[in-house]
Image 1: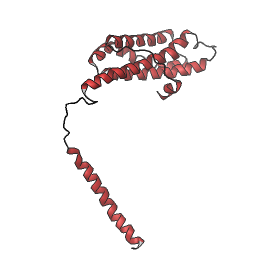
Image 2 (image 1 turned 180 degrees about the horizontal axis):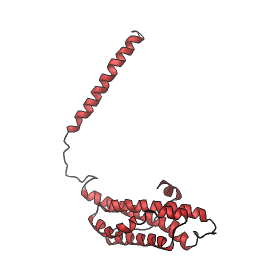
Image 3 (image 1 turned 45 degrees about the horizontal axis):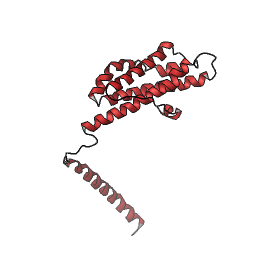
Image 4 (image 1 turned 90 degrees about the vertical axis):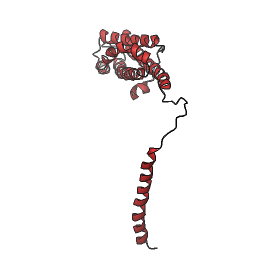
Length: 182
């Protein structure tokens, strides 16, 4: 068989095979799945269990980052003009501020999977939203006492909400690389 004949056959056969594969996979979606009565990982009970676990993990990371790289350095004077390592502390605090906001928003989404936790966290949502610009304020060195105190206050309220809903939050300090990833 000549090269030209092989090329023609390939040009004809390849689209036919692809068409059959696509048609076969498109038609296979009408199968009904039988319910076995067993709890699947997506059942409402499992969603609630995992919701609390994810809430605790995200809120713990937010609390750890806020304390380690925002509250503690601010209280130790690391953000004041002329302080040794001020620039590094401000950069880390900026990353921690963005990370904290991100993890608190994730914790809020996780709390929606558990009615008790969602109710307990509802009053704190406005406080979490107020932290949105915190990362850039810290990076620029424009954060004030009230900004840092509001972070500490919001973290405390999130911890209290978790505790009242049966999901106690403990601080988990993320690594610097975790902060950079967001």
